[in-house]
Amino acid sequence: MEKELSKEVKLDFNVKDGQVILSVGYDGKGADAKFSVSLEGDYFLDKLAEAIPGKLDDLVIEAIKGALK
Image (cartoon, rainbow, N blue to C red):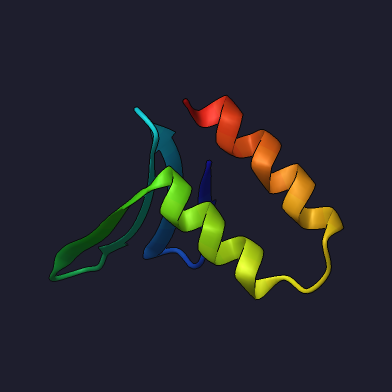
């Protein structure tokens, strides 16, 4: 999934080989830059489950974890 944040900045979110990859790219007039973070899928989803209160989301996140493998 790619999301344009402005004309110069794009956010990219991918899942590949069990990794969650977040990238931010800047394509400016005089400079270009890219920052990327790759997280283990289970680690990312565990942190997401901790951040969301309640238990219903935990069931959904566990199903997603199974789909990543």
